[in-house]
Amino acid sequence: MDTRFGAVRIIPGEDKSRFPHCTSLFIDDDVKTVVDPGAGVKTLSALKESTAVDMVIDTHCHFDHISCNYLFDTARIFINEQEASCFRDRRNLGALLGMKEVYGSDWVDRWVERISDPATKPSPYSPQNSHNWWLSTARVDGEYRWGDVMDFGRTRMHIIGAPGHSAGFSCLYFPEHGAMYVADIDLTSFGPWYGGSDGDIDAFISSCSLISSMDCDTFITGHEHGVVRREDFLAGLERFLAMIDERDERIRSLLKKPLTLEEIAESGPIYGRKYHSAAWVYMWEYLMVKKHVERMTARGRINDVGGRYAAA
Ligand SMILES: [Zn+2]
Image (cartoon, rainbow, N blue to C red):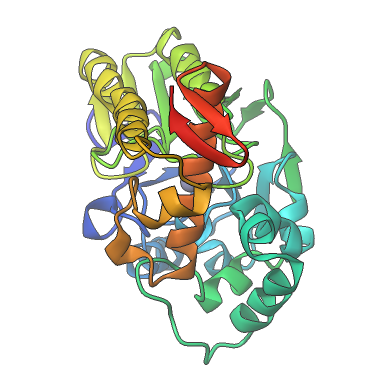
């Protein structure tokens, strides 16, 4: 299996599928379907020129997986039921991404205004102010649920609920081919991402153990690697999840004296300080730090000393 299995074509994203691009799938069946249209405008425009696309399926609402929804203006756009409200009201997206929790509701309103304007200046290190956010969240035509089996003609695809990266995050399993699109369970050296307000470290770990228990020989990651055989996937997943413990240790080593969440985040244990000039990167730094600190506090590894935290 190389770039195709059955009717499914794997479409590598531009720039090696690095964020903000991703690997997409094209299901070239009776119902012609693009999965996670983040491969890049050039790549997906060429696909659109060559065939009529009936359906777009987004595994979750993050920019790098939906950025070209807007290109497929005659297709029906589907996303998981937990995140569909983000496309009906972008303020819900602002809440899931963390903006409301860190910067407040007014900030979310101003963000929606900024992305509505094609002239808004892009932000460094993140697609925060991209007008494509606006274009690609303009409508949703259907919702799928975890456990659904979608039939495209010759191809059947099972929706596997895999929360943690986002609340509605879904992996797409093709049992006849022993293949699964795992999107952001991507084995990259950055490690797992759970920076949104709906991200959850323990759910992420459980979801990884669920997908690795499934009868599947081929995993397709959304970033960098692409097609990964089972054995390599399992080894890569172990290294990938080990980043969670490494982050714990990095944060704990800062807590020889008690610090607030803000003080911990400012030292940049996840992304590094130099990226904090981008409001979204600092936001995710803070939220990931908060999740680690809460988790270690619950496990007795950190003590809460009146709103400051110290290593136990
Ligand atoms: Zn994502």
